[in-house]
Length: 367
Image 1: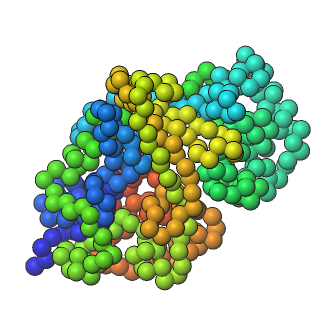
Image 2: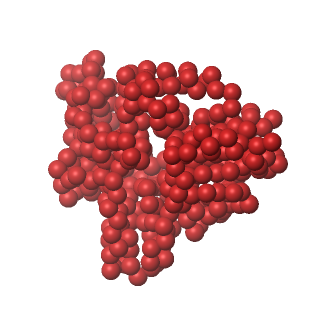
Image 3: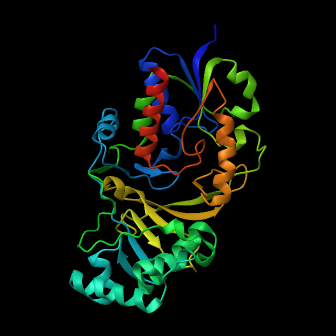
């Protein structure tokens, strides 16, 4: 008889939710993670009484009341609303593109004036069949919004010229003709009061967890401990890159504690010009309406992913999607291995989507 029913590789949201659901059904679970903490990318570190989002901003938002109730059963969420600001050459613009943005750009005051300005620029571009991201964006929002608020940010994010990026990356750009700075349209939105670690701690309560464990250093022995393995890491790494490596974009973070109460007045400020190497600055206390005497800020630098780095964003172009299908086909032949999460599924997930996927997977497995 095996020691565990499930070995769960990765203590991020997918692995933690699966482990919680399996444990509720009386299953014995062992969760391992190669980092020195649980929570994956939602992990927060307390600095000067501030919960610092160690791996970038995580704002929970969903329209799914079931998932909202699920996370709130572990920790109460606050009323934080994501209202980022864009800085372009010292000018500030509200995001997403809304009537405040249009007023800041053109001093227009009515939706009709704003729409006319955008239509005029789209018509002047003469683009009818967009062939790349730049043409796609201009054909949707015109040149001013594109040049100031999209071009530099997108090229930094992807590490490629917008003219070299496929048009499908920007299928649509939401234009909001109201004075509403709420970035998300979802009904439910917030940050866990006391930080995301409380959510992870609740999910993994009474479950055996081992951190600082590299699954690939002892893969066969670890898998022998359990009847089944739930794998949430890079699927191509699991199969020893036999078809080649999938591409990702990664991030580097520069955290700094400042001896002042308030640095930028907002949790998220995007820097959209190409000459500034980081894409945004986070000021973490504003996620939880903090009043601490000091503040912590983080500059976020996108970079190309290489083996050994954390993979954040899959590059879901045709070439990589075709490569992923080969690994997915291999994974579907496995009887005792379950693949789940953004790395194993090579798919960008928001937090509520990861939780939803983990609940569906666990329900199917445990029914």
